[in-house]
Image (cartoon, rainbow, N blue to C red; front, side):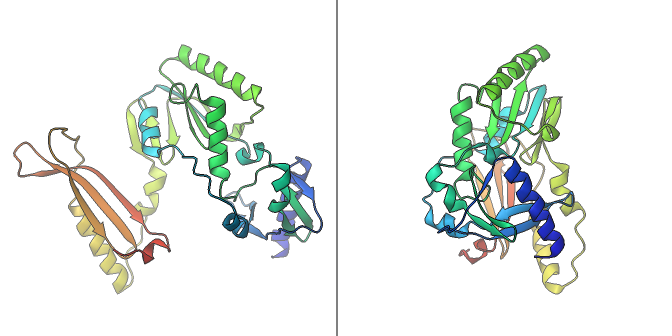
Length: 293
């Protein structure tokens, strides 16, 4: 690594060591390398390459919440509290027998984690299970939880204060910490998992479509052909309409080399015109480009 990156890694290691997250180790049977990831604020996030450990680990199939259901059930409320766990995964302790397996090496020494680090295959499922265990009686009522993102929802100010009091007592009981820089209290609307929720309903996060709005013109023949395919696909997607439960649904799929799109439609009362109900699009990851069409 570059010397300036090494110094930032040293700073991060020292911070985690002082917080009691790390312990020095010698002669470990497991070891992983550091992968520095630059952040928007100029700092470097210290990630550990746990691919070998993940290959040797069984899969925890504890389910994560469905994002669409979570967003639908959150919208329509008048007051929100958006919360983010402070180093969320690190608030869960590693089992003593498994600590040494998280060993990573730096030029400043070799360490292992005493708390659950980021990058483990089952970290998300483990954290979600912990949240469900601690807040099972409040979930789908006063709060919504998606891993380390928590949302408290209320319809009145009085109800909002009651929910906050109950929530903070629970957080204090289990010594869970929040990141105040990423918490918003008494909000009328806010961003949630790629959407903007409010009392009015659900809107698209403008930051998510900014890249499309600022998309440059195609400069090669291949890019031009792909652009024509997208234009043709979008030209057939009219304004979204609410579905009629008494009529059958129609699904259109458009599959390209690097992306897929679909439109869910339904005939109108006359049975001659099709209305779009919902649409989705997805750019393939590298492994997905190998799937058969």
